[in-house]
Image (cartoon, rainbow, N blue to C red):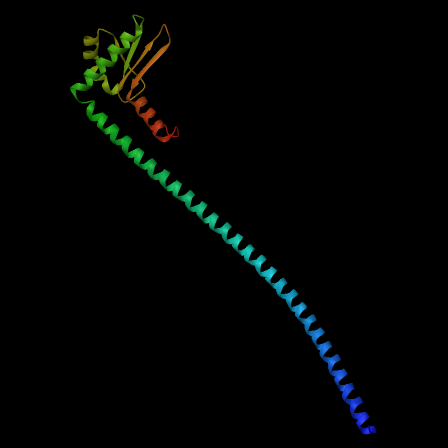
Length: 193
């Protein structure tokens, strides 16, 4: 083998060795780059997931806040409307009672209440009161019941109130009390007459 051939072989071997080393370095470098890229991708993915979870939680809080606000507003609207309807209903009841008080049946009703109170008193002294608006019925009620009737200084819209003084018992069959009790029952104890 000639010197040129030997140089050619050595040159060829050196080139092949340099190529192999170069390829190994490139491969190692590529692997390092791939590792760095993978780490960065994982970090980006973690940040994206964290951001997504944060935004999702934020949207959930905002949604829940909006739902709570809407529910509160709905409840307030319903309560207000219920109150309006209740007020209208009880005004209608008062109107109907006013009309009823003008009928002969109302006097009979008062006599039944008076007789029931007298029976309840069981012979004890009893004071019977009627509403000032029923003053025109006082004389007829006294004649028919045989008891002294007092016109109350306090208005109670109709019906009677009686006091059994010896037992300190109040019998309240007034329309104002009945309306007030019904309002309280319908509103859960919030309203009063």
